Length: 94
Image 1 (cartoon, rainbow, N blue to C red):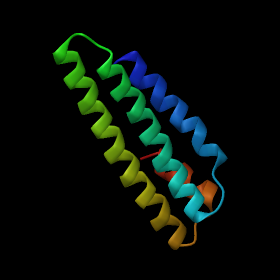
Image 2 (image 1 turned 120 degrees about the vertical axis):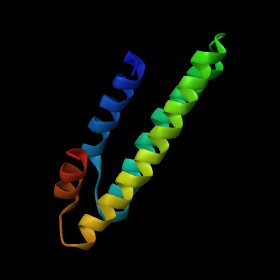
Image 3 (image 1 turned 180 degrees about the vertical axis):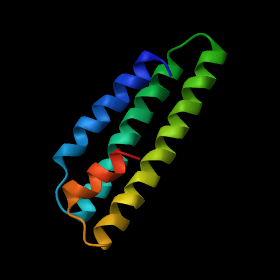
Image 4 (image 1 turned 135 degrees about the vertical axis):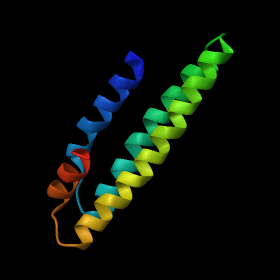
């Protein structure tokens, strides 16, 4: 992982603290990962190196998949009675 990816994931984790109810919490998780993926895709579009662009796009795809999986996990934990804060904490620990 490059430094940009690590910084984007860190920003995503910080954004999770602002989530509210169940749907907001899961949506925020997924949106944060999608925003980070969008930034990686933009970086890929701005690089002249095709191998680097492909790697960045692959990382973006992985972030989008991770975001969807984590959003589903937040929903599942909240369906089982966890608060939004507890669900996000447990999902982030995964």
